[in-house]
Length: 334
Image 1 (tube, rainbow, N blue to C red):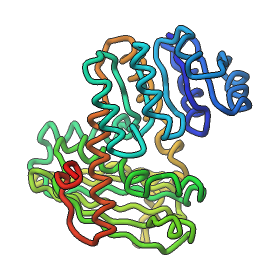
Image 2: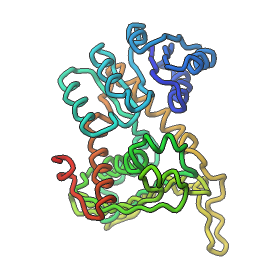
Image 3: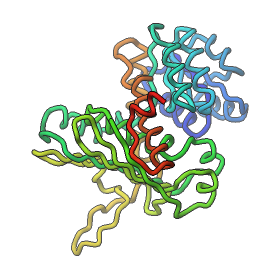
């Protein structure tokens, strides 16, 4: 099949590399406002370059991958749907939840599949954890812990436009908690602080946060995030039930150092970047999209899924600013 890529920044170029290695993909068509980025992709992956999204949609593509700036996501999703072309779009659907809801309303009933990029759903550890929960291996759950710690903050310009740490970073934890447990979040309480880069505080954001999520069956989920984790990129989950407890991310590249005597785990070189930690997950995610394009599977992460994670992020943001518990119903209705 022929896949179009809109946006060739860091993640767009990474997707181009991944797609070019998939058996199902015969050719790529790319476009980016920066001609040098498009040219580099063409030279590296043998892609065809066009000068606009409109030209890309008219180039006979079977599916499109939206990796452009967040502000462009709604218009590009809608353009793909109007053209009848299946869409993969990196999260978020839109910069604000109100915009995201409008996108959902606009695409409902169109019959064009849309997949939003939440790559942890395709990581083998998380897939196995979901299967264990669904299979009843843990019994009734009581506690979930989810962690995302970045080795260093992104640039100041990125932070200023990110929408905040809950919408940019923690949202991955929120999505994977929903997906693994099969439950919905009803209430949150969030805290945050600034112990590192001044530009994060100046942007009105926190660099380190914690959130307590109450799920609809009473399970408590604890989410921990930071822009500062010098030892590496740390993504983990623990799921505790009345029958068993399991973990995702306990492997030799885990960026932790044990101080217990005689303990050599973890023994590997720590993960230092999300592309390192989730290389195979990204490949599985885009392989899934080729199956969506082929019509052999439904979207594994819909706009509705993405919006649910977004409501949790909005609730945590409000909780942080107002120092109080916030229900999901409050932000959804407000």
